[in-house]
Image 1: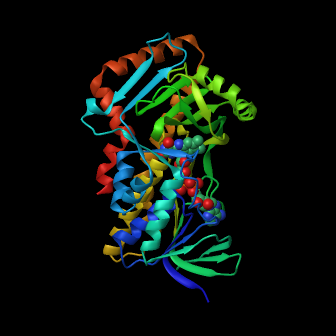
Image 2: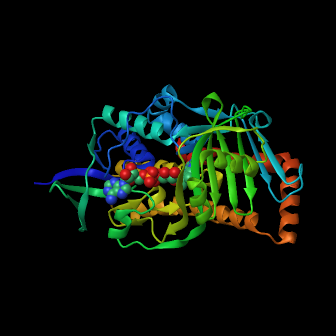
Image 3: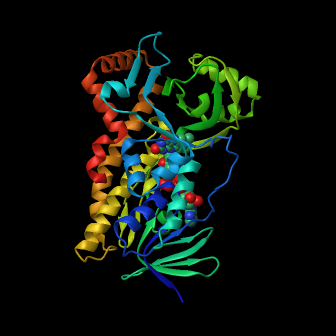
Length: 404
Ligand SMILES: Cc1cc2nc3c(=O)[nH]c(=O)nc-3n(C[C@H](O)[C@H](O)[C@H](O)COP(=O)(O)OP(=O)(O)OC[C@H]3O[C@@H](n4cnc5c(N)ncnc54)[C@H](O)[C@@H]3O)c2cc1C
């Protein structure tokens, strides 16, 4: 006997779990299943920091508030940041810089740095409070079959589920996307991201710092108690080397790469490397299927937009599903789902192209390109309206209308 749901979400990560909570909040009549291959970690040493963090924009914060997850996140730990400082390693000191300040924009902050495990835990707590959500976790999927009227999913333990719509929120290597035979367009970067947490001699001033090196950007993201989360994008073999050298040597190299902006690196936690990819799927939807988050598009972390784009997918898909329900339409119908695809594709593609362009621009060693980017950064820094526009885009303020 199979159990029927209106919507099955495969992947209970930051994007999939937000979608489940949002749908349950906005359309109480829906029965939703969330399937994840792994159980989330819900306990950890409170003195440690997750090495994976996300810069959460104002738009994403609003969505978390709307679904009742924000208070749970804040009750654990968040780090608002008020300024952002970006500079080019190839420029002479004092030039090729960009500085953003929330006060200049009349904003309380520019966003929040939040540990991924805190976001996932809060979302799982919220899912437990919503009776329409059935959580299957850990659960391994074995097969999926699309018919005209529904989707049929079978798990390794022989549990069978059917639904009107299945949503693939299962990350960059999405099983659902592969089963649905949806091709991706993109490429692996010649970069990998080394992540770790450090304590610096000088306080980070609640500022997000990013230095563009020819091999990739190096970011120091502010955490509580003067700690910083590091995302160091560099050549894959260099990232591997940096994880293997002794902690003291790593601290010295990191400090040099960062021009000692925050003084000495006093301590370094565990180090890990993530390969970087950039792609977009050829289709976000098929009959009875929608892809969201990294399953649909994966970008370079240099502007901290990956999960924020996924959360914008969520806001749009909720809106499309709710409209279809109000109009008594089938939520798995291609015509309904195409609206979601049209809505999100343009936004996501422009961010993908912008991230790729930035990565190439700052990676160039051609001196004319170096001079031009220097000039561009300095000019942008002096043009307040342009600077504010860039920041508003980065904060997701322009996307507000989608989150009402
Ligand atoms: C180094 C680094 C730094 C980053 N920094 C930022 C940042 O500052 N800001 C930002 O916005 N983004 C950032 N990103 C991007 C961000 O981490 C991703 O965009 C985000 O994690 C995507 O969320 P997701 O829920 O779509 O996918 P995931 O987080 O990958 O979640 C997928 C879920 O699906 C589950 N799953 C996978 N396969 C299956 C299966 N077969 N069956 C069932 N379940 C399955 C997994 O267990 C997981 O729970 C960064 C990325 C990297 C690599």
